[in-house]
Length: 500
View 1 (cartoon, helix red, strand yellow):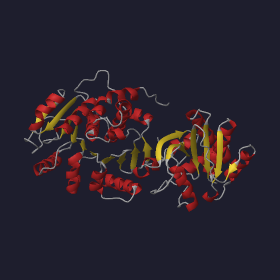
View 2: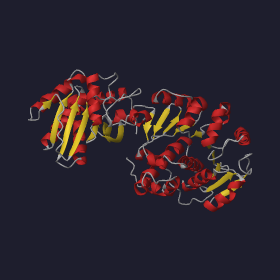
View 3: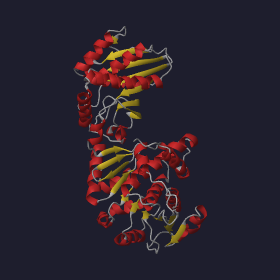
View 4: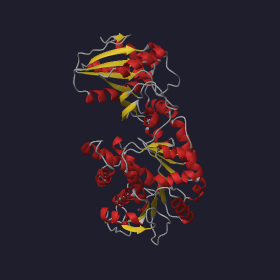
């Protein structure tokens, strides 16, 4: 699914109005209708009290139309117009006139009905066009909205105060964001985690031709996109046709990392997996994971990397440590390797210490850093937008693919960014990064193009947590649960119907 910048979203509105022969207000009514139906389905209890906070722009107009629809449907509704939030637009005034024809009053101060079973604050103060700091009066109101723990906060299109193209420090802390037609990049940035919880993308019928033909460098990997990248196993496949992955890693006390990574590679669907690890891990991996083959070097850490097998893909780094001999072994390996490669963990930290080695990497090598590893590789940043720009530059300069692990992992291929929506806090436990390395390496071994292996692998990895955490709980989820649910994730992906 495409993620558009604000200028493209506004252009999509304009093109839709022209081609469909409607007015801006009619488009507003259409959008508000989708919000109304979502609220009605989500809050079916007629004892729910809705309190609207509406600015005087088109976002506020959306709120007024929704308030009118809920009122006509016999919900208890209160409306506040936030006059300090800017000058009224023509569409807002039309929505206000229509609302004034009903018996629903517009208030100039908050009146909270606390005797009702459920209180919902609907935030329609500012839309995606906000590009300046808010007046203090509006900030004060938003503080009140955020501090009332009795209410559920629902934002129309965007949480008010959230900037779309620069870092944000203050906005409505939304429980639900009901955004129109497209996901917004700002929703998935770490710095905005306090302002966005659940995201619902509402289709308001914007012009499909414009959406399909307008280029963008930003994408959200929704289930449809994941299904498109999925490659079913051929009916006459065998282990020789499904690819051979080698996982290089492990050191004394960290053999579990290479065990998890190797098992995840095989569970991702490749035909053969070889673990290359020090001798202290030989018995461990043969006992833990009998399906894997094992090659060893060194006693407690890897001293050299050399093998006779010819894999289709290699994963380097899980548990490998940073012993000087291991670092030299990695350098010697990189000088001679031309096999598709995934690099993780201490191999990344070693690479960060020797950035000149980046020139040795095969084209489209996949790096999978967590935030601190990313900082060591590319330097520090001031905000998420600067981080994305730096990742793009780094990816382009070294012709590599970055998998920037985070709550919403981003895959960066040159100037193109893919945002992953799957996964949850269950993945915040040791070993899940090793599992991701194994999954991506296994997909590479099966013949997935590098970018697809990274994008689909990250989706699959996060999806396992979405499936399992409802049964295990977020707290009790482990990296092994991630591996155990790869098959369930595949089964769910296979059931996704592709749009024609």
